[in-house]
Image (cartoon, rainbow over all chains, first blue to last red; front, side):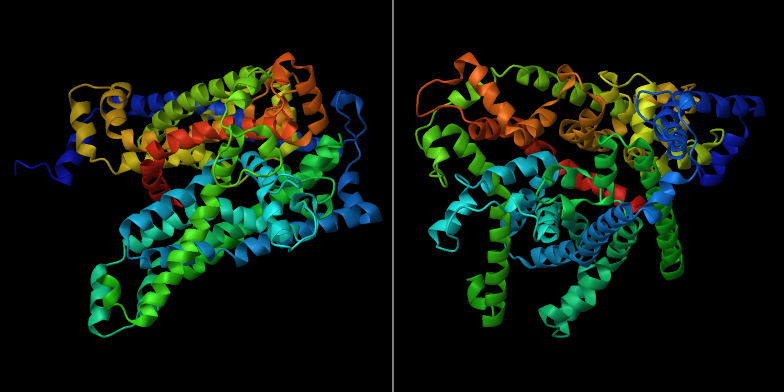
Length: 319
Length: 298
């Protein structure tokens, strides 16, 4: 009796006079209000800028002095052959990068499973600590490292290839436009693999050890244990992350591509996010806005699609 | 002893995965090591590509000279400013807001909370954002580095989830003693949430230090440049970098340690990466916890 039960606490709450509770609900709101205003200003107010997609807007001239052109900028994507070709090229790069990303999203799973198979505790810890470092440096820094390692005359990579006789003279991987999709996905995993595996390592650590012991008694091999115990244990985590990356199919982010882009590889590296930046930088504000709008629409649709899929398959929503 | 007990197939399997992880781990560390030994080695050996495994002709000229480049130390100050002030504000705001959102009695709680969470998946786009920032006079303005990041939805989710796991009896007894929300936040919530606050401090600090897109877009005046952005310019504009080196009086120094665009780039990279490498061992234990709580909420 002396221990307060759920009902007891609830009873105490109910005994607070109604007027005081009314004040509290508003007091709480007022305390949150300044932050909600900040959210509105920086996340919702920019949506009003979509209006620029319907004008022949040129930076520096007030919107009121620029002609309203309706859907002109949306139509150029399909009606102007040069523009269409460019948009298709960018879409091809986006789809290629995202598909490569989805196809390799199993890498951190493999990384985590194999790492737990390592017997030596300190080695496991060492690998995990060191492979996570690249996740914490910016893409500019990744590019700066790549720049030094792959530089033609003094870089270690080109030096080693020359001394092994694999190439005749120094070459510059970063200035080449061929294989850029593969190079980009390779850098992506160099940066994110160790970090991406952390979730799965934690999921594996959460699996009931008795399952393994029971399997051991039954004489299960290492691979059978992985396949029948570890894999089912981490599939829910994998599935959630996979659905989220489907939702982000058109959002590759731009930092990586921005850092690595140059005149030689522009054709194959330009994904949607980078394209928007580049046309904005060329001062075509209305077209950049139009592309952004379509991109947002597609990604909202994909996110809802992924969410519905999640509800159907797992009976749980991801957002 | 252990090895002897393994079957031949198992021993081979172990050897292969040890090797694979060894190679990958090496590929993650070596670039940093390579850059470090090259920045402290004699510059003509470095330029010839002779420094691969250990430093030779050790000197610190690169660092002392590079720090004298005009604008660099100021850019470092800007980077430190945005990291310290930005992190302080976002952690404070996330802690407070995360706590408020656990209060079921808040008016419109679900709507406000969802309207913040949904911004993680949705953005108006670069140009609408730029125009908004411009209209708010946040171009060429230090406030642009710290104001937008005050609301970081992921941090708010982390704190809210963490506070929800704290037994409510603690808060309720304080409330019966007459403590208000602010007092409960200060004397109960903050002390009990330190682990998650430490985690978001690290996430935010690293994010602030690494940011460069906002500088690229919003800042045209060089006095607002950050280290990251300056490094990006050095990487892309080798002609202007060479001119910069020629124009700086102290750059020439001795023949074997002459500054080149490459040596300047490598040294600046090292200066930008060093703070992260230094704090990394301390924060490493926190972020595993952070990402786990975040994962629960997805």
